[in-house]
Image 1 (cartoon, rainbow, N blue to C red):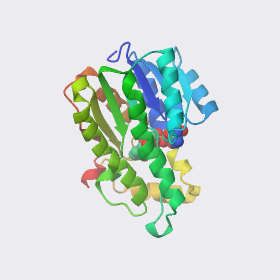
Image 2 (cartoon, rainbow, N blue to C red):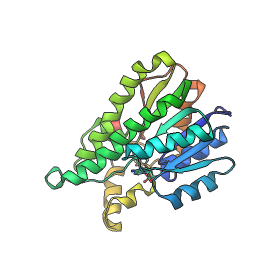
Image 3 (cartoon, rainbow, N blue to C red):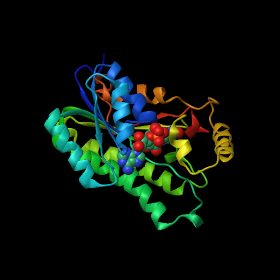
Image 4 (cartoon, helix red, strand yellow):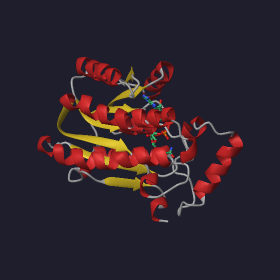
Length: 248
Ligand code: NAD
C-alpha cells in the first residue's frame, strides 16, 4: 500500500498501460481518476477498477476539454497527488507519406495533450506530487517509419527535465517512463492488417534483448515506483522499461 490515500489521475486510463496502472494504483491504496476520450470505454474502465474510481471524458488534444476535466476533479476531490500523463497514439509512415494532418494529430495528442494536462493539473497538485509522462524507448534510436511518433515521444523527455527544475520549489517530482514494445490495443489502432501487424511485431521482437514483448502490468509497476515515496529523490529522469531494446 505505497500510495495509500493518494489521488491519482491517469490520462488514457481506460486501455492498455493506463488501465493496468489504474489497477496497480488502486491495489497500492490510491483513489484513481481515469481520463479518456470514449465515454463507454471510460465508464467500463472505471467500473472494472472499481471502488470509488472516477471516470471523466476528455480529448486531451483539446485544451478546453482538459480544463473542464480538472474543474470536475477540483469539485469532486479537490487535489491531485499523482498525475500520469499517458494518453497517446502511435501510427507509422515513411516521411515521404506523412501529411500535415497526420503530423498535427500526433503532436496535438502526444505533445500538446501531455503539456496542457500538466499545466491544467498544476493548481491542484499537492506539495510533493509526482508527474509521470509516458515516452517510449524509440526516443533513443532511429526506427524507419517512426519519425513523427518518435519525435513526439522524445519531446516529453526534455519536458520532464525542464518541469523537474521549474516545479522543484513545490517539491513536485517529474519523471518519464519509457516502455519498450508492450502488448496493448495500440497495435490494433495503427491501421495495419493482421498480417502486417505480425510482421511488424516480429521485426520489433528481433530487436529486444530479453526476446519478448513486455506486459502492461510491468510498466504499471515502474510508474507506481515513480509515483511513490520510494522515488522521493528521483526527479527529471527517465525509467526505461524496454527489455533492453534501447541498448541494442
Ligand atoms: P492504448 O491504445 O491501449 O492506450 C492509449 C490510451 O490513450 C487509450 O486509453 C486512448 O483512448 C487514449 N487516448 C488516445 N488519444 C486520446 C485523446 N486525444 N484524448 C484522450 N485520450 C486519448 O495504448 P498503450 O500501449 O496503453 O499506450 C499508452 C501510452 O504508452 C501511449 O502514450 C503510447 O505512445 C505509449 N507507449 C506504448 C508502447 C507499446 O508498445 N504499447 C510503447 C511505448 C510507449
